[in-house]
Amino acid sequence: MISSLAKPSEGMAREHHAHAASFVAHPDGGELIEIGRLIDEGKVHPHVSAVFELKAAAEAQTQLERHHAQGKVVLQMG
Image 1 (cartoon, rainbow, N blue to C red):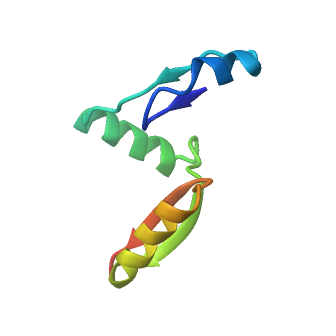
Image 2 (cartoon, rainbow, N blue to C red):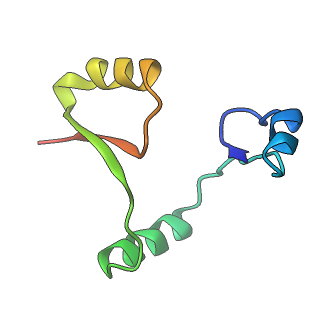
């Protein structure tokens, strides 16, 4: 079990025969370019659960706070 928010419970991980760990991403321009290339080539398929216009950013934030997103929530510009 891996979380980007906080380390998951070791006890809960044991109950599910899993290991608990946390992950923190660090900005890296080169990696972002590579990820973009992989997406453009169709080798990586990000899962988008919702798309909001930029003017609905508050609604998008509310959805993130109230529901567990099963993918990325995207703000669409223009």
